Length: 361
Image (cartoon, rainbow, N blue to C red; front, side):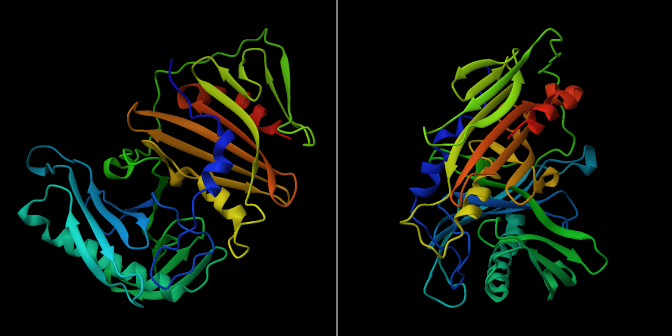
């Protein structure tokens, strides 16, 4: 039986037991970076499909990696390319100062230009993030960036780790660099950053089929995490089987969980945006599962937030549609509903699953 994402009961503890760290030198992000967070960008300035990623270990240590998949045949063939460098920096210096580096991938003699590109990218992105100042919400800055063709607009988003940079557009509105995936390593053995190999724009899934049972009856869900909590309600049907009081499976094609999560506590640093820490974590992939930011949609109103996402699992070569719904209970407490469906089941049955999403209250 294929395993879905684990129940999110412990997400609050995972988020807030970790000590806050602040990443780039002389940058104070409103959403702190935790060890193991990373971001990959699709870089269209290259002639071939290319990605550049950065991983945060601590304020002294980062990894950067360039990746390009294998392309072409015959005389047009180009092999897969990966250049992975571990850097140490001096966090006390105003400007980025490298104190050490180690290339941890196999390189070829013609990789010198890529190594130089990685260095320049690290220096430039750090300086631009420093100059961007405090970023509490999405913002854009018009500036000159020779590495990406001259005059550009740089877009920032506090939910994105490390550089807080979402994309770069040229003067003719073409996107040169944009977030491809954001993730969190879950252990020292997690190879998600080192093995990221891009995400196919075309979603395919022939292994997960689902046909609605017309005889299934409505199954209302009402869950209370604590006696004093408000009930969190939804409606599925009797095709779903309860694994726990707040965890349901639809055969091997979908899972549904509902829980209560807390954004911060009285001991937390009041200058840190606890809600955005929670939002960022919900947008991240982990454990060889990658979020596809090209398909991310966020629907928000005064008291609720819905993330519509697609995730790709490298090990199983599978795609899932993922819906995370946050419903505000009080200033620090939220109801969290998570519906995850394999693409082969979701796409022919969109209305069925969308009705479940609409039932979250």
